[in-house]
Image (cartoon, rainbow, N blue to C red; front, side):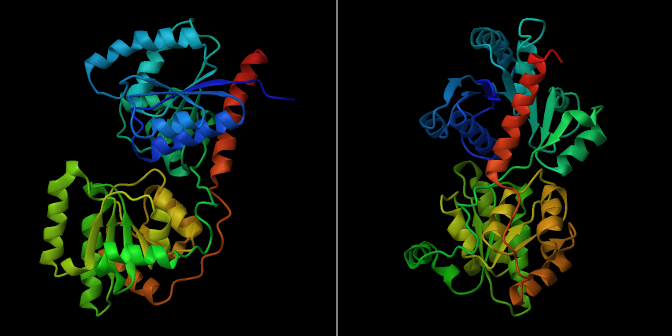
Length: 375
């Protein structure tokens, strides 16, 4: 039986960069490919162009600005929903979720189903509780599911675990950068060509563990193990003071000539593939940890703290890369072991982007089918 054509509105604060934004585009792409109508409401950003080019619609609303002025969008959203009559309203962040919740209040939109995705481990409280109010609540990992159940009064049956996925054609097993890319990379970062490369991807925030990565390089140096470190994505015009702080730490530890820092790059596949180790050292548990999956899909070892979604992924996919959170001595020991001889990494069979897309669209269809059947 052919599924009916759906109209789905996703709400997200903005479309600049990040895992939430990427998942929004990936689901939008799947909706369009399946013949559905895909609409995203956000404040805009650099990802609007590829979203629209792929066949979705974008409606600009500043629904992520934490201000009382944001309440004015409730009426606008109510009118938008009344005009479009969406089958699904899917909120991926707390403030957009609250605005959508109030806009859908009452009996004005009986045909519309409210879905939320818990992308993070937000601090428990009434503000964050909105992410548990969807008819279905998507959790991006079992870590997130357990966190929701532990902190909120929610029927576990309403939670659906749909892990984020990657395109295995984009991250093919055993990929190696070509000579042209390698030469260009070493022109950009000549100091990285001299020894095994450690890469820590992550934006410029203390939560990502950049200081631990610098301390790791210094500790390995003290053991006579020569490595280089790339802090990929840490450079941000809004975070200049933090970057200077990291540079000073590298100088103090005597490894300034071994540490490079970069803004976000489009060639992360090649950077990971050129790395001896990809690091995941966040000092706060993460909900998922897409970089773990990306690196392992390429057959590159990952070393990370065993908490949150990263610990969940490493336990399942690469136990040799797990280190107890905060145990710096064990981190150094394990890094030395993996640099000497890393266990073999089999081809990755899970966490496929197409499966994430299929499961999300199946959830939408199930909700609409249930309403059609009078359930």
